[in-house]
Amino acid sequence: MKTTPYGSSSLYSNVVSARLSCLYVYKQYINMTTTVFIAVIAAALLHAVWNAIVKGGNDKRLNMTALVLGSIPISIIVLIIFPFPEMESWGYIFASVLVQVIYHFTLLFAYEKGDLSLVYPVA
Image (cartoon, rainbow, N blue to C red; front, side):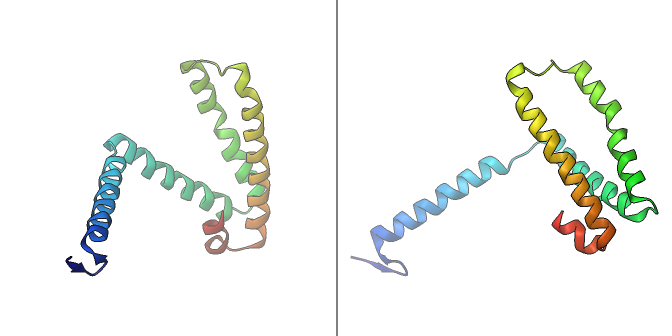
């Protein structure tokens, strides 16, 4: 029996086969369209920008309120374009709203107490 860095050759072939399978799965899921890539980069950029706006202003509460209220027109457009959510999803929607409200108040408190370079990576 041939000896390899992994012991017997059958173990070696299993390891190589497993690595090739993982590589195939990785390549299958890593492919993304240009549109998705641009959307992800734009979302990251917008997230960094709005956090810097909130932290950089004199009145952090006013900045946060303006940014949150600024999303209302976009939400209305989305509600017009896409179908209205089913009743079964409203519990999840309300839970998501509650989590977002808690997140925004916590973030606002953190920005009042800490520096952007400390708070932003954690947020």
